[in-house]
Image 1 (cartoon, rainbow, N blue to C red):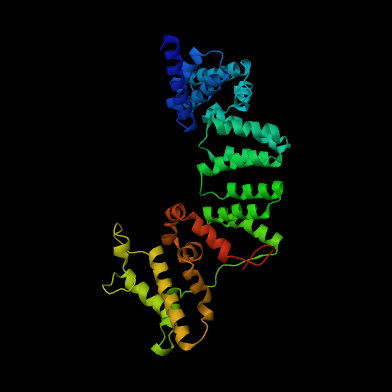
Image 2: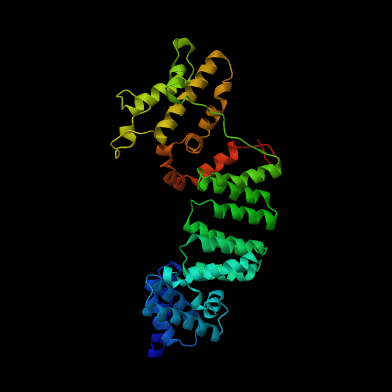
Length: 381
């Protein structure tokens, strides 16, 4: 192999390595590679673009100083080089023409934040095209921050550009999967631009799954339900709560006790780590925790036992377990944990939600779709 071909191959490997680092967000690791690629390929606009962004990653960790100012000047210079070489990249063009005097250096504002902030007046006066360029540039410079990508999606939505809005909402969700806003606004974009009510519903449900403890997360689905003539209501499951209700459930006469007595007894045995507990014990299910607490496993197991008791009792009596119908149906669907986390959680059980949603997102989504939406156009029940 000749030396020229060997050099070109090595440079191709370096370019691929640099791009992989860049796309994964490791801009500081990619910086020396793009320094060399830009030096050895002075007519390639892509390397100048990438170098400007990587230099920003270096500047973001610096306090206000002459060195930082010099680095910011160089970032703008590299972006200008890319534009002169023919770059059509929005980020390069925005950075190349950005007035660095607009930055709030006293608060250590990054260039990304300054460009993001500069997009606000354009959005306010409905120049969504320029707002999108600036929000998108800020998101490119700092890809791990939620808001610039979210706002870029909003600007694209108002431009009627669903593919671009989708791109940016996905970026925002990658950064903060448990924030409801991007799902809600993505649903709005699907409804507004594509007039796809079913597609919008999917995103509105995702907003609830993202964070069921944020009331705003339910606004999208509520709006959808109103438009579709559907009713939103959770399953009617009413376990006894507090000492008085629990004592009432136990009753004085065993013959007249409701199945909720099973719930009360099993929870007590579970929390006290009783040896003969029919649903196991807290110590067994949470060996890493020294002190017993109200838990997801405890609630779901106790509710499951209650559902079985209610169904068995109704069958023996030849009756329908009306008061326990929803509990039995949710139990048969294997979705008791979903109901607990959405409607029967306290701070102890809610702390288990992030991991559960990560492992069972589709189950939570399907639970809402199946058990909380009733009637309406195209809703089969």
